Amino acid sequence: MDNSNDALRTALAYRFGASAADIPPGAGPDACPETWLQLAKRGSCRHFTDRKVAPELVETLCALALSSPSKSDLQQRDIVIIDDPNLRGRLDTLMTTGPLAQAWISGAPALLVFCGNNRRQRQIHEWRQRPFVNDHLDAFFNASVDAGIALTAFVIASEAAGLGCTPISAIRNHAQEVSDLLGLPDHVFPVAGLGLEWPKWPPRISPRLPLAATVHRNGFSEAGIKETVEAYDQRRDGVQPMQSQRAIERFGKAEFYGWSEDKARQYAGPERADFGAFVVKKGFALR
Ligand SMILES: Cc1cc2nc3c(=O)[nH]c(=O)nc-3n(C[C@H](O)[C@H](O)[C@H](O)COP(=O)(O)O)c2cc1C
Image (tube, rainbow, N blue to C red; front, top):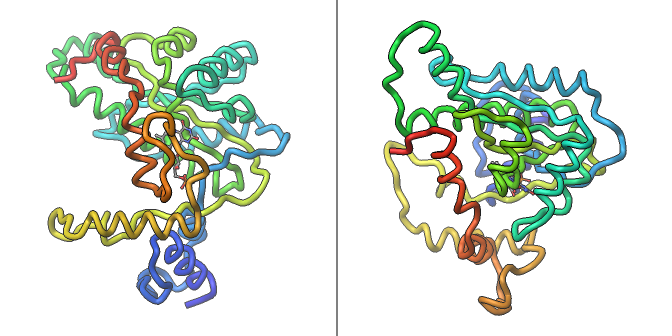
C-alpha cells in the first residue's frame, strides 16, 4: 500500500459519505492507478482560463473516446467538433436563452456534440441488400448508449490530461434547431454536448448517494431508501449546499433545501417534453 491508495480511500470516503476506514483497503494493485484517483476526485468544470484547447488535442481525445466499447461493434456514435465561430454563436444562442438557459456555456472555449448514429447501420443494410428488421426502440437505445459511453471516455481522457469538461444536455433544449444547424440526417441525433476547457481551479468532488443505495448484490434492494436519501440530503447540505432554490414562486422558500427537494422541484417542471416527437421525426420507432 502506498500513499496514493490512502488518497483514493479518502476521496471515495468523502464522495460516498463513508469513513476512509470503511472503504476496502488493498482491493486493487499495490499502487493505486492514477486513473482511479483521477476518477475518485473528478468533477465537472464550468470555470475556465482563456487558454485555447488545441485542435490536435481535441482530435486525440476524440480518438480515445471512440476507442471505448461499442454495442456489438456497431459503432453507432459520432462526435461533431464545433470550431466555426458563426455556428458556435448560433448554438450558444439556443443554449443560453429560453426557460432552460445556461449562461456559462457560451464561455466554454471548446464545444463538441456527441450524437447517436443508427443511420450507418441502415445504410449498410441497403448496400449489402439485407433486410433491416430491428426498427424498434432498441435501435434508438443502442445508439444513445454508445454515444454516452464515448462521452464518458472523452471525459475521463480529458480529465487525465488536466482539462476540465462538462456534459451539456442543454444541446437538446432545441433538438430540431440544433439538428438543422449541424445538418444531422434521419437516425442521427444529439445525445449531449460537451464543454471542454483548461480549468481555472481544480475540480470539486460532488458527494454521491452512498454505495449501499446504488450498488446492489444479487438483485435489487431499496430497503431504507427514503431514510438513506434524507441522510444524504443532510450530508450534502453540510459540505456542498444547493446554491439556490428552484421555483420559489411555485413551491415557496424551503427552510431546508436538500438535494432531493432540488431534484423534485427540477422535474416538477417540463424539460425537453418535445424530444420524443423529435426522435420520432428522425425516423425512429419507439416501441
Ligand atoms: C448526460 C449529461 C448531461 C449533462 N448536462 C449538463 C448541462 O446541461 N449543464 C450542466 O451544467 N451540467 C450538465 N451535466 C453535468 C452534471 O450536472 C454533473 O455531472 C452533476 O451535477 C454531478 O457533478 P460532477 O460531474 O461535478 O460530479 C450533465 C451531465 C451528464 C452526464
